[in-house]
Image (tube, rainbow, N blue to C red):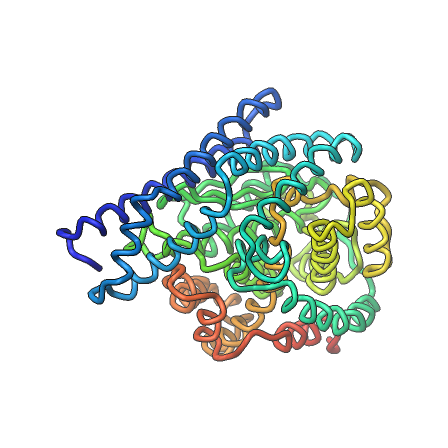
Length: 497
C-alpha cells in the first residue's frame, strides 16, 4: 500500500475508518433495539439511527474524497489490497452519490419505525397495523432503487447491494430450475415416517447454556463475542473483537434453537475470521451476503445434520436438561432434526423445503418492487404462494406474511442470498469431505478446529478481496450450480438407511 508520506492515502484511509466506525455504531444501536431496548424507545431510536445513516451518507459523498480516490486510482505503486479497498470504496461512493441524503435519512427512520410496528403487529396478528409502515418502506426503497439505476430494473439495484453483480434476470431461471428439482425431492423425502420428540419442557436457561456449549465446541471466541436472545436470530459486529449473535428459544423443543445457534455461529465465525490487516476498511467484510450465508448454512446443515454432531453434544444435553432428556438419545434428536415436512416458518424449515420458502419471498419482493403487487394484497399473495409451493396455508398473517423481519427493515434483495448460500455451502462441503477424510468422521472425532481451519483458509482470511463468484471458484474449483446441493439432499433424505 502507499507509504506514510502519501497524503491522499492517509486521507482515504482515515475516511474508510470513519465509515466503518459509523456503520459499527449503527449496528450497535440496532442490536440494542432487537435485544434490550424498551418499547417506549422506538421513536427516539428511529431518529438516532436516521441521524447516523445521514451522517454516514454525508461522509461517503465528500467531494475531497472523490478527488483523492481519483488521484490514487491513477497511481501504479498500489498493491492488491490497496486497489481492492479503492474499488469497493469507489463502488459504495458511486451508489451513494445517486441517493439524496434526505432520502437516506427518510429510509432509515421509516425502517426503524417499521421494525417496531412489525414486532407489535406480529404479536397481535394485526397486518393492518403493519401495512402502512411497510407500504412507506416499499415506496422509499423503490425510490432508492430508481435513483441508483443499476441493472435493467429497480430490483437489480437492491439485489446488487447484497450480492454485487447479481441481477433478477439471472436469478429467475436459477430459482425456477431449483424449484423444479426440489419438488419431487420434497415429495420423496416426505414419505419417511415422521419422528417427534416426546412432549417435554426445555428450559430457557438450559437452551442459552447449550448455545454457549456449542459455540465453544466449534471454536467461537467468547472473549470476543456475545450470545443473546431475540425474536429473530441475527449476527452483527460493531468492530473487531466484538462479534454478537442471537438465538430464539423454543420451550417445546431444543432443535429449532440449536439449529438457529449453528446458523448464526456460521456468520459469527466468519466475522471473527476476517483478516486483521485490513480492519476498518471495505476489505474487512464478506464480499456478499451469499458468501456469508454459505457459512451459516454449512454449519447449520452440513455439520448440524450429522449424527456425530448430536452425539458430541448429547452429554451436555443430559447435564443441562436431565428431566427432558429422559428416554431421548442422540439418534432420536438426529432423526427429529431431519424430518422433512412442509412447514409454515422459514427459519424452522427443514433443509429440503427451505429453498421453496426463499423462492416464494423472491417472487413476492420482485412483484412488490415492480409494483405488480400492492402491500394490502401481500397476505393473500403470501398465503397463495405457500399453498402452491408447499401445500400448506398459513392460518394467520403472523405465521404468514409477517413472519420475517427483513421487509420491515427494508432488506429487499436479501432473501435470494440464502439460497445462493445453500448452493455455495454444498459445494464447500464436497471439498471439505475429501480434504478432511469425511465430515461425519471429522465431527465424530471432535476435529472442529480442522473444519474451522478449512473455512478460515478457503473463505474467511480473504475478506472481501475477491468477488464471491471468484472466491468460491477458487475455494471449490467449481462454478456456481445446484448439483452439489441436490446430491447432498438426495443422499441425506432419499437414499435407503
